[in-house]
Image 1 (cartoon, rainbow, N blue to C red):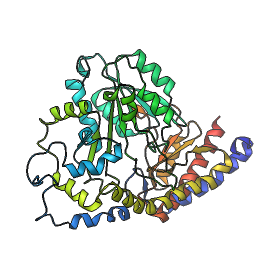
Image 2: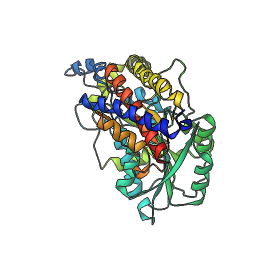
Image 3: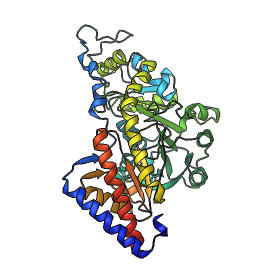
Image 4: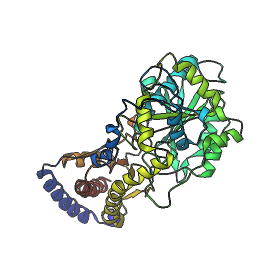
Length: 424
């Protein structure tokens, strides 16, 4: 274990690790693990969808001509395809364009400008708008808040989800706290799935704000990598039991099912929320891309077809996760200089190193030709108070590239840790 080494041993270790680092730098590598992008092999799984000749079959099940204007909330068969992702009814879903992130942004902006059902005034009329942000979390959620000027409050994660004691206390005391970001299934980046207890506590929240909303981003709800996948409770169902069904807005998409740039996204919520969102959305668009919705239905057939399609993704992704986890177990585990969760699904692995080493690890990797998500990106304002968390995205590189990148990553962890211990 590194912490048990003498100063002389650490100096010798740093010398050896630096030599390995210089050898990697000399190879002129260019490897990217910065974002959770599907690999080209994954994108090819859906290419048949692009060959669908829609010149004769352009009508939806209710007779709608999908080439024309209309149908604000999505064609019926697209709703039927996506609603099991969120566990909602046909009148509790809107099928939008390709991006669930856009739907999240739009609903927040609606709340800022117009308010929400049950609220006494628009969010923008308050002196401040605040959001709770479980972290490590999704950097694009935090970027939305920062772009609008919403103050972010970091909430730490526990083994089964956010620290609910802290969440309950904060929302019950502060009327300016209007929402919380959640990735409940295989969280980005920790890979944690929320326990039944956590979901029930969310449904039982007693916010001081009458317009508080839970942003439930179920991005990875069918992205399983195990024969025994995680299962989470349906938050909308639990909120109905507590009489607070308007408190939750749920989101999902096919971004990592078919094509990230040309999928279909959806929002699920109470009928009152859905009707309200549609009433505001009607000024924004006459309707989303119904031909793309129809194309997805024809290709995936139904929800069962979509889950079968995800097994093809798993066959490509699972070996890559194994490379990352096996390399960490072999190279880092014996030295007790880092920790990580072994997720049963999702797109990321969250690595926690020695405090004060994350930025240095990312810097060393970059020098050796490996690009990672920036240190601190998984925290609000890009500020990791411990400088110890790094998000690893295994999906895009080939297996050979990934193994090389992980070898460099592990050497960088060792070197940064040795440097840190020598400085203590």
